[in-house]
Image (cartoon, rainbow, N blue to C red):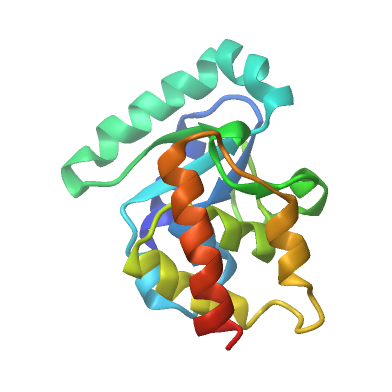
Length: 182
């Protein structure tokens, strides 16, 4: 069982009601593309909270209690779920929510899991200049149809108003064009 699956199954065990989670990062990649073993060893799960769901999350004590119990149970293994980001804090396309894909983990009772489309997963990996993120981008890019117009995808991306993220995104676009698209 991969680390992300272990974290999510533990969270599911502590929940009493249904919770929708949109995963990204290596946890989402591990579940969506299980053939890449290096993604399954990630120690955490990253979650995007859409603006329209913020209040629902804030008021869901069952989720927060389950999250606390999960992290407490798995802390000795170094596994955790604490990276919860508002959609405004992550690089995504304008209509990213319309293109999310379900993640199926048989046996879950209370978690409904999904992930952004591959193009959006790539955009989220462009928030910093990091060799591991760039390696992930290369692997993901092979799943994107060649007719996709990356200039349009980059131009329509919503980038958080954080200078370091904007700078990384600009550098990563140049890198992507020269090293991935060639």
